[in-house]
Length: 513
Image (cartoon, rainbow, N blue to C red):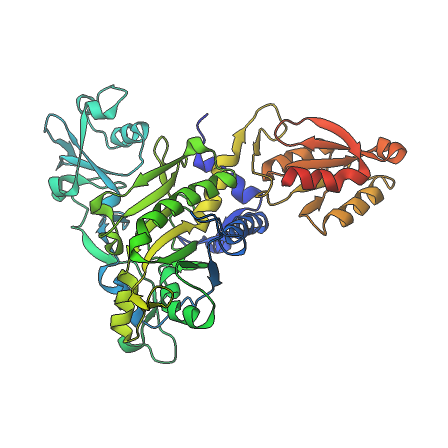
């Protein structure tokens, strides 16, 4: 069954997962706030990643645990950082403005459609030979837009497939003076593309001039490279090893869209794996396999994941030489039946360490005392995951429509990811039910995130727990007072069983594990 992103966005607001930032003032495009359940879900995913990387990292190809240490670097670094990394000169997107609607678009995110017969049509007295749409626009949405523009029927036709009458082309092959923008009502309102730097700048200190300008980091990786030597000097690490970091990053996206998928403030989970150059291929394959397995372990179905190798023309500057980049992609509702990037595993080579060595004047090579005092600049394998995108993927994958239950839907989170592990529900607010429920709640909350919910009838409380993805509900009723058992309701199957009150904690431990 097709899932509409509007329903997911509505659920996230209704149940306290994600809110528009500055909501009471009308919001701010590209910025989002995580509510009580959203931050719990995000922290669960973050903690699982940190545990799998730093606390209990995987076994390497030789069967021994790999060595990874943690870091938390500053959001604002010396501006030379971004000159060395290539972000000041090359971190740009082609931008197109619409003079009619004042909307701004990334040119590489636009689709341009022209009639197969090469004819043009007249809209508001002007010739239109091409129509621009955002990537991901469906056939139905394209037809609806053309209908609103009063494009003649011969041009649109009645075919189910829009490509029977319209041909997709690139920006270079259209005449912008005869192109209708994605939200425009007439042709000729799109400006020629110009390059737009994606870094958000700021001015630390009291002076606001070019000399004092700094940047909010567009990625967490550079903070790791800047601390590579500090880690070598202060920690007992040997090659190969990794440095992991979770943190905020900022990009002045031209067109933030698809809820929290593409926003201007987001969180990343990145690890830089430093290794001898000749071992890069082995470790690249290792981390590709490990990172896909991680997403399977937190509950994303394999049918909604794929691995995709970047084409040469889409590689980042640091990955153009060497092994390239492979993305772990997820089938989001707005990309279906296609996929969107969830995590990238890139072979950055020795680009970053060489650049920072040159710009800073510091030696950032490695002295291998075990192997004949050999000196070399390590190569880097970078698994870089979007924590914010990961949260969205978990919600989308968990969303289940089920008309047979009170809420009409439920969230099928893996128990380890669920924001609330269990709900304690006294059947009624009677004095004899509530104390037993409170005692169980106080006992469980020391180890698990649990809710004590006394309000409303039991059906409405079940409905709420289904909508927030709680795996188990324990109901205290009259029989509990007689035989010290409770009813446990399992979220997915809605099956109900009786278990002993004193075995609830063990039951949760077994199920959540």
